[in-house]
Each structure stands twice: as structure tokens, then as C-alpha cells.
Image (cartoon, rainbow, N blue to C red; front, side, top):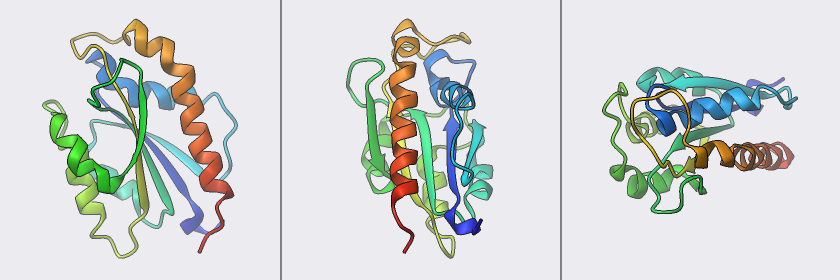
Length: 160
């Protein structure tokens, strides 16, 4: 496999803050599926700048994260990295090493930056706890389906 055909899926968030950990919970669910050989998945946790290392020589990166999008809990919005600047100022990563916006800015400085998109999920509860709110737990199949559809679309798009 040409490394540049690699697709990286990174779930980010803090598993100790309920819905804040939705990205990591989603990665755990996706591991139950047989995905294409060129797809690599990572639990990005609260990794900050170390996430940049996962993106070198990569065609596409899909982040999964809790994002305040002023919708019902569990609502899913897929957006491009260029949209992060308008959406992410609302999100605070007090327990993260850094925020996703800073990681994306640094990634854009790579020689051959990947195409980045974010699957954002509206959280209900960000508080101490290791389980998802009922709303996000009930939305998990939709979240997984959305990510799998994005993978299928990326894999079916010819490389330039």
C-alpha cells in the first residue's frame, strides 16, 4: 500500500468527562467492524500535538470529537478543517494538552498536509463520569454509521 493512500481516523476526548469522550468511545465501537486495509484508527485521547505524528504521509484524516454545535444532544455535523476556526472557539479543552484547532494549524504546515475533516457530535453532559449520557449512547449507531459512510466515500474517491 502506498502510504499516501492511508486514511487515519482519530477519536479524541477525555473518557473521564462523560460525553467529552465520545470520539474515543466511537473508535472503540468502530474496532468491531472490518474496515479497508488502508484505514488506521487511533484513540487520540487528549493527545494534543502528538496527534500530528499520526498524520504524516496521509491522504485523509477524520477526527471524531464532541463539539458544541447548538443542536440536540447526539446530533452529528461533518465539517472541513477550514470550518474549525468558526466552530472550535466555542469548545474549551481545559484538560487537553492543546485544542484541535491548534493541531490542525500545525498540520497545515506539513510538506504534504492531509485533507482533514471532523465528525462533530453535540454533547449533552460534560461532567465527571466515565459513561456517555443516554442521548449519546443512543446515538452511537448513527455516529458509527456516519463515520463508516465517510470512510466508504473517501475510499471510493480516486487519488489525484
